Image (cartoon, rainbow, N blue to C red; front, top):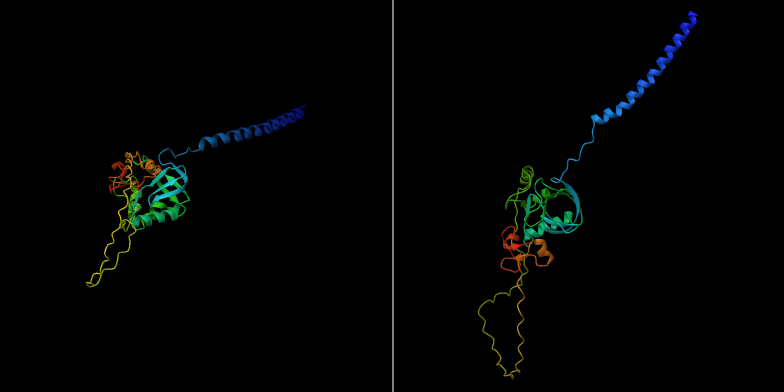
Length: 256
């Protein structure tokens, strides 16, 4: 009987040990995911309204530092100032911008606390397939770092652009088409005899048509987007629709 008791005790011990191991392993494996989830939570998106970035297609280039994206929104590049479009340097800047981004997708990034200027244009940092757009433009003599007023770019961006802007900007005069002038007369040649005038009968007077009524004056536009939509841009000082608030650099040409 003693031998039987020992055998039964041994079997019971083995069965108890065999039942404990799976229960311990199960509790350990079930608690592991909870521990991992607690130790490594999913990080929240750090990009908010300020500093947000987006991509857009450039549909039209206005000048070296301003363009239009899909939907008609005008974008002004932060940190730089290109020559005005009608000048020699402005035409160079416009062509450089067209070659780089026209019809291309660009990445627009906002400066925290900065959204639009007084002309209702979005102020954005611009990246394109070739890199940073402002850094590319400021290296040329048609574009310089913005100094006409408050530069809304960050201090670090301004410092970077200033280090690349070694030549400022050279705009030149406004490009116009001039007619060739006649060659000067050498010496003092004798005047040619003029033919005697032939008397001709006076034609009967024609009825004078009433002068057309002057077109109503055009008031100042609310912004440059409205002026361009009306086909009136650019606006010149003293002309219809001009307002000092639309002339961002005070050169007498608004919405250029």
